Length: 360
Image (cartoon, rainbow, N blue to C red; front, side):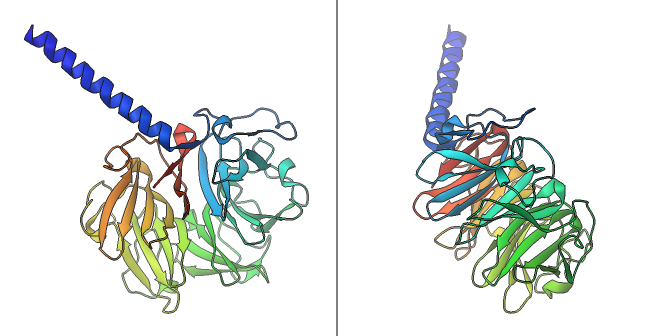
């Protein structure tokens, strides 16, 4: 009898936990149906376009916010979607649903991409895309909707410093960010370099990274420092923030001093250090990176299935989304991109669950 009561109590506890998880997820779920969006034929004109939770977002990776607008990249169908942070209709604006590298000079809706990982918007509505497995950086004109390649020749390699256009080679660039000084920064991930495209001249230069697969030295000159798998970028007026995927750590480059500084992560794979100093914490394949309105750093700790937040003043780390979180204890599956809205909170691409979540 006692054993039966114990089993009944255990069942009740598990069911209660599942119900709490379901309620929490329902409150956080912003976009995607939870289903993939792989295609064998191009999308019909004007589709998909629906309420955010009614659009299949197969493996959403990049998330970008500019004012009230939100953009999401979806790598299963190689597309980019646009909506609003308040939940207005979400619509495909680039990519026809098929894998490829075509369409330059024409409508972005009819072009093909190959795993577009990240997208950034400028104040004029122009979009800059890390077309990762095409090894190029592309631009979508905000007025005409026309797509062009800014840099890269469509083949992987390392070339083109001091040159532009098709004279440049990247190797799986994952992240781009506008530097606010007329340039676009590129995380040239598999080349282990941070590069900059001058948006006036088109000229590309390496500003950090030597190609070596090792961590930098704290306080060293950024131009001569290695970067071990730069995966995601963020900027503010004083710093360029870099998540090193293979290096399992976060660094920043001082924009005036051009020196590189260790921010978080020991460099070893792991999941530890919450409530303690960031430099003693461990991460596992960090991907997305963004600063919130309080100057705290949000990091998508992908292989730990979590989003973590660093309070740079208090010098502490906490998990804010994921099973270990006290704030939002839900199950994630290889999350990637993240963006922040002062009005709404942070949006996270919960990639292999085929959805985007919104949390505070």
